[in-house]
Amino acid sequence: KAGVTQTPRYLIKTRGQQVTLSCSPISGHRSVSWYQQTPGQGLQFLFEYFSETQRNKGNFPGRFSGRQFSNSRSEMNVSTLELGDSALYLCASSLAPAGEGYGYTFGSGTRLTVV
Amino acid sequence: TQLLEQSPQFLSIQEGENLTVYCNSSSVFSSLQWYRQEPGEGPVLLVTVVTGGEVKKLKRLTFQFGDARKDSSLHITAAQPGDTGLYLCADPRGGTSYGKLTFGQGTILTVHP
Image (tube, rainbow over all chains, first blue to last red; front, side, top):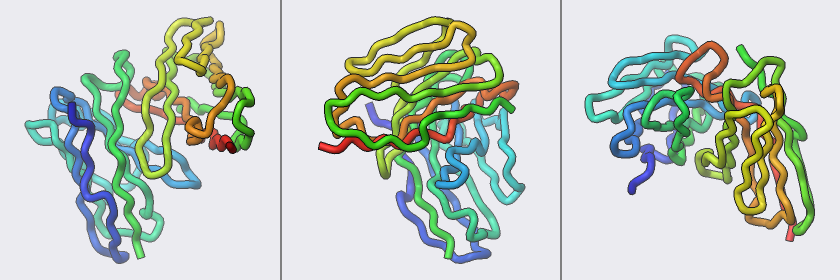
């Protein structure tokens, strides 16, 4: 059974640019969430989608956005990149949203470096 | 927002030693998950504990959920270099925010051969 696939694995962007990251969840999983991981802040929740609807959003500026497609694949977009956006971006999928007794399966992440 | 405090932040031990990692909160957990993350990879779910006082074992790993469901511990017996990684506790309900995992800051464990 294929795991959660995130592309690309590594990305280098310049300040002010925008970036789109992709996540393909485990087949049958309808909940997809995104997290940002940095050494200083740890793992922080960005947003969660279930059946194409954003059900929850973390405390990040509006430059961070996402969407989920009918096949449950998800993308997140960051516009006007800042140096502080450099991080490991992790996608996780689950049969149902967290809190309903299901664990999340994480992808290997996309390492974004903003220069 | 529920805050999860993990201790210690860093742990460096020799192969064969035992260790315990702690996760505490000022609020009651509905349930708690433990993850392990290796460098360059995403976190991997180890266990979910739900009932106060619950003890779960996964080979050499023992997970305990406090009676009051405000704390949890992870004990590793006879640690091996393969246990090296970042151990994270997470609240799957995220406090009042459904569908969100709130993570502790993690414990970085290094097991030396």
